[in-house]
Image 1 (cartoon, rainbow, N blue to C red):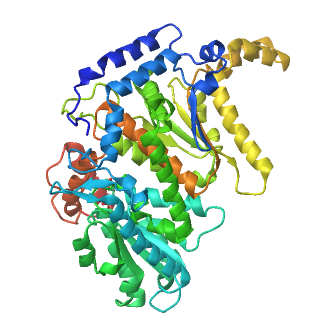
Image 2 (cartoon, helix red, strand yellow):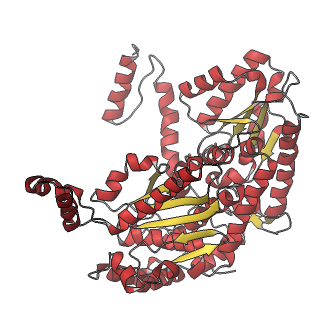
Length: 559
Ligand code: F6P
């Protein structure tokens, strides 16, 4: 197995320096001259896997810069990292865990292994397959009516209560896979501890027809436990305490806590510590997906993820989709200084995909400490945001086209639609190509002026308005195209980004698999909760916090 000792920052410095020098050259940040210089650029700066096509040609990565990016990846020993990741080595070194979510979508005899707290290894593929059997029986039982509500009638709705990875994945995937043909059981997602969110479900759902999944890896997350208990009270209040057994299931690694909550073992769908929250939609956390979209769809989803795992693991970096997407991102972020990444899926079914990627990217790589314990030498993660296209064009795309900041965009599009209005899909697709072209080509003052003259505008108007209508162009984007969105291709798409994040983490020399950055706020909230009781002392805080807490109480008529 390759050496796991953390690399010193100096190992990658020459490659970083080379990249910085290339970008500093007179045309080093321009894209259009690269197309002029090489008519074959669309082919050489793209790669495909099955019907999925990734185009990174609309970036300012020259052939020399691409070479230097591969040198950077190799200096960072990305290929070794991939080998250690798939071998189940404890790449999550602060928690001494494997990041073995790939086992969740592997075949039962794939032999993926994961490290246990005592240092021994378990067959993660077998563990995952065992739990999948449990899930399948349950899902098929609910669908065929052999698992029913307390009154013997079938469930019509499933409420997944979870947050972060226990919400974003299942929510995004369920929406995508049930958007067109509807759901076998209507999925609902409750994440926010804001009581208004629960009140809405309590109003809209019929407890007698609702299956409640309490989804929490740790089963201690404040929001989920608060909402879980609220749902339990709501359901037991309406149907009696005995109904809880029929209506509740837990998706968790923490059997002790699920038992305390009152959920019997056969209704606990487990997974292991080697599955990080943001990688857990493939595990029992995906139960709501399987219930909504059907077991076969869930299997297809896993198969798509598995196919992309195989591609990632076995394809040289030069043709490796996740690696290419990662390197384009590194160029934009670290070399050009573009601190954001805009995700534009031209697909209403992927409305929650940007939110999903926000956690995947930012919780994984929003870190400042390298594996060696020193500080990172480069920015580690862009701020990710996005909305479905074309909606985004009528909101924030103004800034992306004309703002002073460089905002790289990932365009995502399925070639075939799952509806019978081809004209609508042509309009949608045309907008993807038009947006990317506009970002690339822009429009000069001379072009604007000529256009305005042709339209018969007077000189004064042209002088006043034309500068505002200039587009600088030379703005980078990447495009991901595939035949159609289905469970399989969605699985592939998610894993494309999962492994992109892994490659970037390896290059920055950070641990993409822990999330200590969310801890401090959680602890402080626990300390503040009792201080917000009427009459309680505020405790010791900074001046602003003390004053805001006092004002909050005063607005409520409390002291
Ligand atoms: O907020 C951080 C986090 O730990 C995420 O990583 C995780 O997805 C989420 O909270 C929910 O955690 P759990 O599934 O344990 O409730």
